[in-house]
Length: 296
Image (cartoon, rainbow, N blue to C red):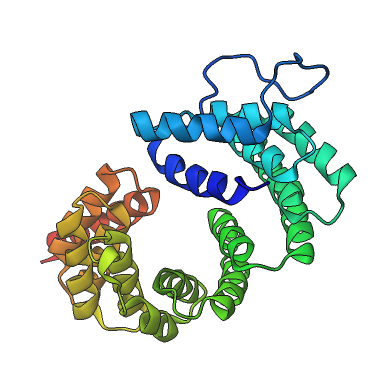
């Protein structure tokens, strides 16, 4: 298809500009007969290119649906449509298309990946990881490793996240964002010094990300450098004053420095933001300080 590469460039642009809404509630996923005047995929692409040139945006869900209807045998069209179905939480039709694609081509990795995503949407996470592994076994690319690491992160499986992000970095050694995630996973698996090595090299586009400074503060806390921990917790809270984790780290650092009253204030604020650990430690510290006050 002479316009295929053009179509993918178009899809990349409009993904930024539009949602995956299909424009109606009728989901077409089981193709039977189509009207004889249905446009072929090249004609559909040309039509949407003209529309994009004229209006500066198109409906990617509508486009992906039409391309799939026009040529349901095209795996790439099928997976683009699956992505839009999932974006609209239409998981079962997305799963059916994945199954049909896998039955047709058992080595097409994206179908296994998207089937894994279907299971994640259904909160059947063990099954999701099974299909992510099947995708990687057929195409061990950085994208799969990176996004599986993020899924493991959601489940607090940081050792597995670290293993996957290291595989992604082997393929993209200059990706600064990947190294930040490696720093996070090193820190959360107890390698605080190693985590700092990655976290302190903050790329320009992440200089205003409070999560980075919070993790640096966390690392310094466990490296027994409470003043540094307070410094970086303050940087995180300057950007966003309502991060309970950063407030909790600062409270712990202040407590380590003997600044108990200030630590108590931070714990109270952290507890008010809903952090259950801070609620527990606030109660314990307040009781201890009250008891000490009555003994003086």
